[in-house]
Image 1 (cartoon, rainbow, N blue to C red):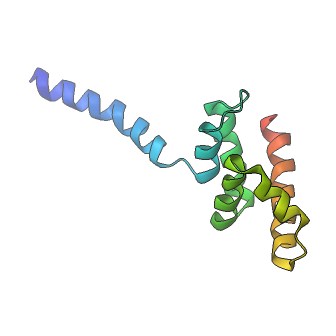
Image 2 (image 1 turned 90 degrees about the horizontal axis):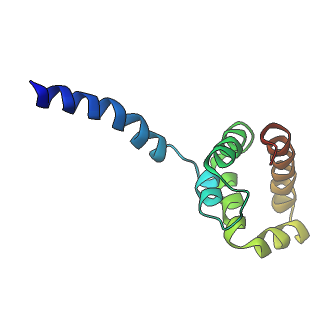
Length: 104
């Protein structure tokens, strides 16, 4: 009896934790694994929520890659391609929204 109660309690506590980790998006993961001292779980989660509202998943993955390689962002910003310009406009809008809502 005690074992089944303990198992049920463990399951009830573990599932939200495990699903929370699995639900982290690419920007949140990159933010959490960055070496920036301002990065913390709450801030990174907030930024991911803004990304979910403003960026398609492909843009999120592309933006997440900037955490490891900031030169990539510079190359996109300097690019003359229409697709890079369109991405950069979406990325800038995302950044402004994240800064306003997350205080980052």
